[in-house]
Length: 176
Image 1 (tube, helix red, strand yellow):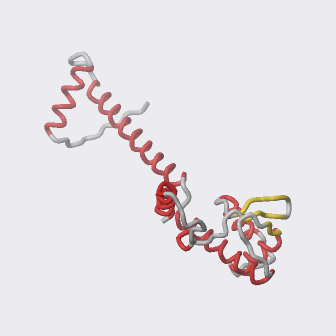
Image 2 (image 1 turned 90 degrees about the horizontal axis):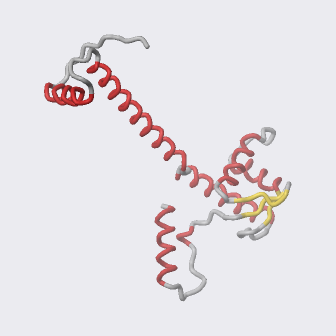
Image 3 (image 1 turned 90 degrees about the vertical axis):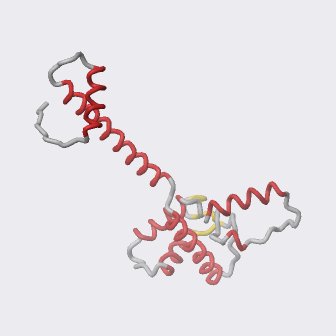
């Protein structure tokens, strides 16, 4: 391993404390002990810093971005509206929709080139990933979430227990 010489300035108390620690770890007057332990301390610092960055990066990518979910929710709402107007059917959870209809709706909503299916496929994959739709068979998708805003939904049963209401409030807060 190649070594380089660095001239650094340290606060006196830090240098004194570090020398005391090195003297306890190594026999006195051992040549190179100070540099060896300083290099080890720097390696530990670099390792812990890179681990912190990696864990922050993993946390960032472990949960989808709120903006991406919001875009997918808006797209799903627009698909439901478009297909409801064009086909004249009511689209709810569990409704089966042909792939071709979803592709046409996304192409019209996003104003995409109908000859290039790659972007449409990307949007369909995002809807699948965030569980707005799921594959029913090779040419049909099942609607899992219509993208409707949950705050606007009225409860169907007027007698909701306090525990259920509390759980609903927690979910609403997490979605915001």
